[in-house]
Image 1: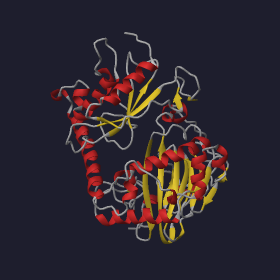
Image 2: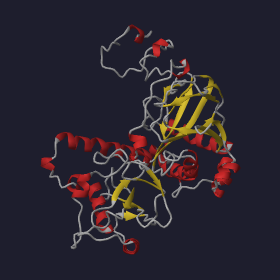
Image 3: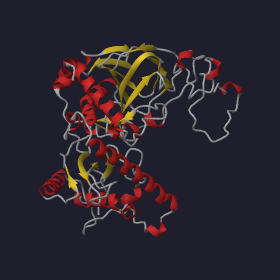
Image 4: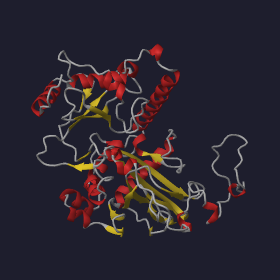
Length: 458
């Protein structure tokens, strides 16, 4: 049936759910309209006041089977009610936050088989309660939620489900175990709260005022429209967070590494600090949209981690771009020399391997840029440096042509040596000597490089 969208009826469903939620539903939010959407032409559109066709979002938490050590805890879910789809067809469902599952896309979105199998009421239309029941079923038995009998599921299918289940279980196990060892409980409160004494007064004032003028008043613009820095954390907060980080290192609990390039960092979202970082991202969202409209708009996910540089471990970081839409890089200390942050061009631009700026880290300050900006960290020459890195993700921006089909141009000339990447560039050896010593060994036994220049001293 083709039933038209009614905001009043949707609001009534939300009110009824809030009055009598099923046991697996909690933290029911308010209906809100997203700031940006991606239109049918792959373009980003900003919210327009009075637009009756603009969608509505509702965030709730949904749990799986009680006692399940992988999916039995509340997971944040956002339902999007599009005027063309609800209630006749569906609400778009996306998990928010860290969530490992084989049957969602990389942004936590449900895949089409989930919608095909979705239950409907006697009139053949969707209801909010039935949508949440389907999400709960998905967490309990995803094959059932997809209408796939277990005996008909391919082996690779069930193996992938098992791998993701184990990842989710292991993460929750670490969080549960570390909760008994934390030294600063105020970092782990629910809901998360940033104390005023943790934040620089200028930053805190800009957050409260929320105007473009207030935000720009705290910024230093290093590269026009591309690289900015500003003070965020106080000395006391840096000390507090580092104390907690070193305590986690001492705990001996397992920690997934942030990425393939950082061997000694930890992911804050994997040790129980995700709510604190959620709130930090919420404070920074207006600034992201102001400086980088598009990649800085409509953030609904993040990857947040600590990187550590010191003698005997990672010294610096090879030239790279980030798997983020906008990156915030906060220096926490300690005492160090060297370790400058080198910036080159944007990925795909004619000057993407031309040097543009060298940033010097300052404790408590943050440098921000789009993820496509090529950059790398010089080797530390003494001391120890730890930084908090916040990769912000916008699933809406990632639907646009600007993200999916970015333009690439021929390089304008030979690169600056500082901008070539040992990891990523095929012509590295033409401009710099390959580093001495072995690479990290992830290759098969008996592996040999295919050219003389790749061979290093062991």
